[in-house]
Length: 458
Image (cartoon, rainbow, N blue to C red; front, side, top):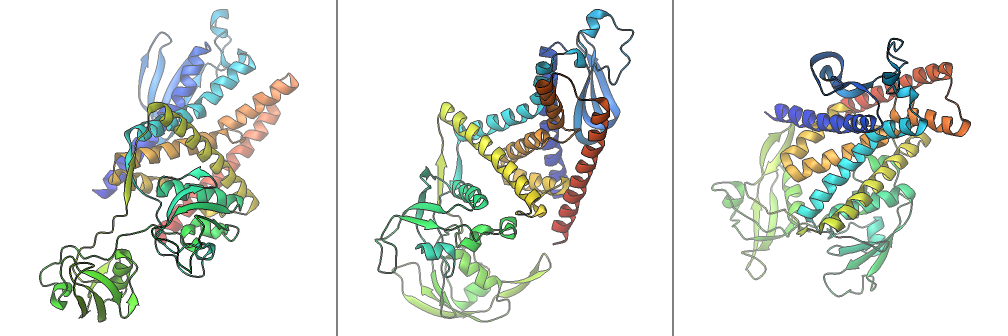
């Protein structure tokens, strides 16, 4: 069932993005007066088609479910010698260079517009998100050295307001790529003590973040983690290790084997890592004002995904502090445009740093990883799935604008040279560039699939 849901989520996401991209080309081509012969979703052999409209455009579904295309009346691909003068006026290469630029650029622009529309709708609707409050900060990390200890609420980064944990992570990724320090404005939960920074502004150095760190959870290396609730027990299962040890619902766990427990997640991690081993658990019965207790509990051993973990059969609330933010349509549109622009710029920077060797090529993902993410976000909910589609749409738009022959960006490069020189590029140059472009794309596809396989194996 999960595999079927993943495949369906991937098909819907990919299909919608391809349709939007090709619709951009199609609509602008029609607006410029160019005749469209075929609109295909998928590549290769046509398995279903139907002709519609004054031009009898063939609307088709093709065998290979990756990509799509718009086939226009083009003298480079069809024999146009028998066409009338009126029909020849609708041939693609006979259009002036600015019309050709508009037609080619319309596909990526449509992807950016889709992302803006999705983000706008999400911002207007609003969705619960974790607030940017920090978990206890480990020593010997950049966050600790900056004066953060845990419990602080981050309200701004480099003077840009922060409302959610996603905002904080996004901003830190951008700054880490640029090796720029992050100046955090914080609200502390208690008055600063003698071991804390008395200022409400601290600076974290990000120049220690490496390319390998960006592949994983680089925030953890910085010492920045999302705050979780205290280790207060929820429902205790009958005859489970927790109940047999005397633990009760509402108990507050303070220490395990004499080591203080930071929060509920810390307690869960200690239990999971201690299968079959006795743990001395200390705390307060029924909350902060209860009586002290000190019991021994032995977590049961269970095998999950090939790993042995410990469980004591008790629920713990781990959901972080949440906030729902909803804005006006105009504000949502502005935020959506900014988010789309920032994401596009970040994608280009990442690609540039990959070429320079500053960021690992492991960041390139292929269809397997994209399908996995599609399935995961679809299971989380509609908002997560739509956000995923928006980000993939931006990536598709950026990738298509790269100056690689066979991509839209390569054609735009040709037409830009034509604007500058006053004449089109030679056919010989175009053929050589096409072969080089195919080689580059094939290499990228091999790297992407290899990365997908390695992720599955790990």
